[in-house]
Amino acid sequence: MFTSRIFPAYISLLSVVRAAVPTTVPVYSGPQAVFPTAREFFIIGCNDPLASGMSLAVEGSSDWGALGAQSRTELFGIKCVYVTWNGDADVDAAMSTAAATIGLVETALRGNVDLTQSFGRSGWAGLSITQVQATQDTAGAALHCMFDIVCSARI
Image (cartoon, rainbow, N blue to C red; front, side, top):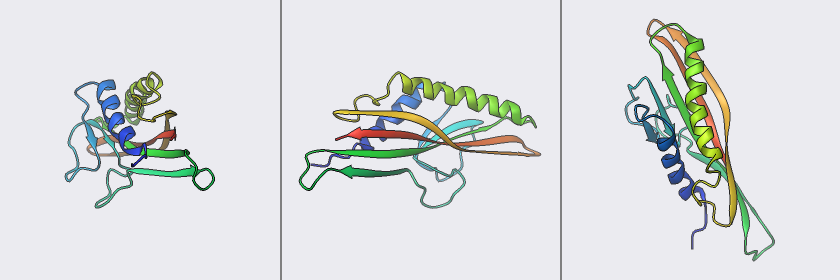
């Protein structure tokens, strides 16, 4: 029997994010073949929205007990990206939009730390921003905010 909690947590996270943000904000699973054109969106299971080819979706490890142990602790981070573009030169406004929208996801996670029972016996999940990239050009200000949903599951 396969016991990793990564797959059920990933699937549950998609539902949590989709329920937390306005319906006008698309939430994609994994990198898209064509870069999305929405002014703001999430990509769950992606560490770089501009990369071509494979993208790191989840990174994790397991801490096994002694040989033949009946349980283990699985630690993993689900890679996520939030992208916003505002069409003007206001990077501060893009930062404010990102803070508010990612805040909706963090609030939803605080109310559902076990990602709808994805972790089996016990576990938790939290949001950790890992990188913020900003740019400004003639098309306006854009922001890429990379974050991990950091999870621990006792299996």
